[in-house]
Image (cartoon, rainbow, N blue to C red; front, top):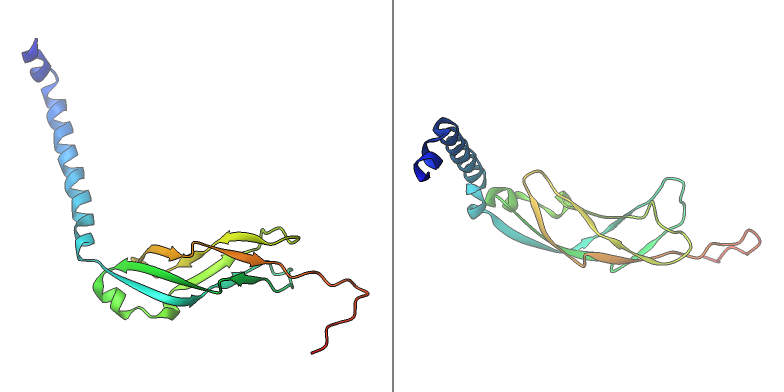
Length: 139
């Protein structure tokens, strides 16, 4: 019985083992450079507000600056500048009647990975709407 377990469909079992080894070697080859990656932290990156084009109000976020930790190949990390990292808060689908919290989104160049964003969320302050009869504020 044990012999049948090993010998039965031996060709298929051998093919499955060969495919498993090939997949393992492929994945290991792609992840082998992960040990040579470097990390870098950018502090005080300004978060930009992204809103719908029809929304003319000016949202405010607190805090205005975030800290972003990234990782990648040492050469790419060394050449990276603060202008290459884009931090934004999308308020285009926000409730315009009250303050809320929103997740901070970070865009980086290819092959650069975001490790951590602090804070991960910011407070979005919605300015009050001016009534049509209210006087405009003095400059």
